[in-house]
Length: 265
Image (cartoon, rainbow, N blue to C red; front, top):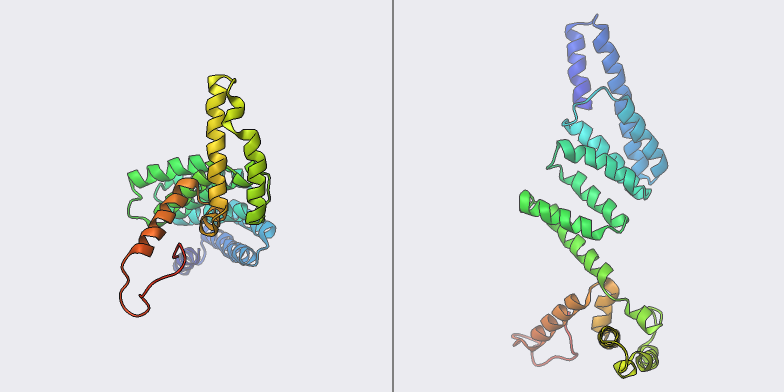
């Protein structure tokens, strides 16, 4: 905006009587003030006010080509404010307009992915980040990070809730977890479904395996920490294996005469 105002002022000096340029300069100066106020309000977490200011700035700003960097910046900054207000659909509308004309505008894409996650649409975010990596985002760290986050959140959403399965809270002690397991395991044991249909027997077997898996993870401090951080069972097993391999790797130098504890992290 500032560079646009400077250019218009230069034109005005060349033609001081040009009333059209004078009116445009007045509009641009108003837009500069609005944008500055909007950014300040957003920085100070006055998001409702920031939204109003960004909207006014967009509505009153002199006509911009959709591919113009300023158009992309204004729409994306407003979308970021909408994210803060959890108005995810509105944020998606803003960034959709940006990416339609500027497919490589990374900030608009990362804002879109954040809105999709806000709506719980992790699978959609995962598919879109994967597509961008294949098309043009291989060398863009923010797209790679967005893909990794989408993959993590998608897997987290799909994993079983072991606390709910056991009927305990997330702050339950190991003793409480094992006690709950004994109670639930009696009801879920596959032997209780011996006369059930094949489909019911298979489901009972799968459920019991999951329950046992939950006991193993929640009874181990390292694995439980990973689970509480959001990792799924597969990722937890990978990290346990890596930790065990590191523990058995030969140590050299000072302090390498042995180690204590099962995992090192």
